[in-house]
Image (cartoon, rainbow, N blue to C red):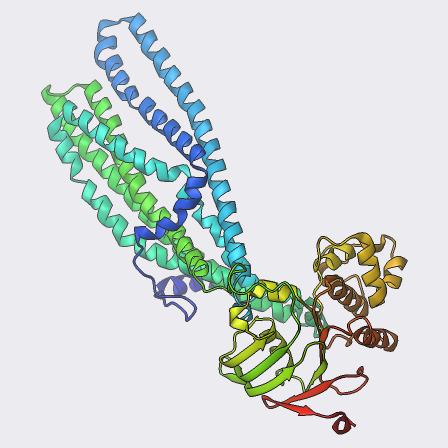
Length: 581
């Protein structure tokens, strides 16, 4: 009982978009232009399926008239030969309709799936080109749900859209036939048609509005589920399973109520259209019965008229229902368009392409903020080619932010970053990142083999190069102890390996890349003392000609360096080694 009260209470509430839900705008047919290139690439299946649908529509037209002949002509003359011929024709028509219906559904299924997959590919590529700030503001689960909304476009490329066009053809053809059968009865029947239009117009905007709400609630739910699954160890540490479950249940209930309200509107509007069609049929029945009683109309003509009228009201109902059914698809298109039109990073074919970088970096009066939080303020410092420098400072002081600015993951809000005498805004970001290796404290490894995780930085590398890099990093010893060696599956985020082993694989990956600059962002956090000494030796010997940036919140146990920059309260201060002591 309490659940029913909840649902009724929710249904009475007016729709109020949240801050994350944009105002519902009037849909423009021009928005469909974005889908035209996708349809063009697979037009053959769509065109063939459309031709088959036209054939199916044409095959349906003779049947009512043949039934009229049986009732008005064959039964009165008792001509069995004509009766048999007409029945054979009717059976043949049905068999042909069956064959063409199967082929139509098959072709449109291929047509729609090809397009949906291509849209997903383009959207995924577009998402990966978005700046890091987008992913800072939107969680993975939410983004994944938005990608899955592409499935909502399926209606645009299904046979339903062609049925709308064929419905217009059937409407015109049937209107001519029933007008010839009885023009007075036809005019009476047409009085119902305006009601279909007004009913559709009244409900379509509401359905779009609630479809958007359902999609947004689904995306939020997906975000929270992904968050809970990613943090399952923390949930268990704090015995918070019940708390977390109740939170997810709350979001599930919100999605359920939103779905219920949308489905109620869809069902009611659809039933209303069916009622209007039935009322038209009853009106025809009443008037035609009077004409039959008066002898002005035959029973066969009435049956044929009713059948063609059904084909007249049928397309009208389909057109009206399609208008309602298309609202979720229109909403999906609008939300996908929002993502597609987000400003992405500079494309890889723009800007100066760097085949090699010397590693000279200069920050000139650079300032940066995360929304309203000021991180860096008017900082100035320079790193020369081949130098080994340390960026030190407390947690949250902006050390990692500087690295992200060097990689072009964030754009400076004031000032300039110069790399090898080029403004970073004039450089191809792809070519820049290809020449820099980074080993981070929070190592991310894919759910794949050790070998493929190492190869991620240099896919064309040979086996001997992988082994050499693993030996330099210290990873080779523990990899050889594993049953499958380099082919060992490490699980999601490297869960089957220790933190130190994951870190060694990340360092191996950076070594294999053979880049011109190496960045160690708290890279020795999970390493033992022996491994840390090995990394220090790498920096001194293997990377002696490369620019190295070492990030640490502590100033100790570090290799011989050229410069030390200390970051505090958004400022960068160069200090000397005697001050470190």
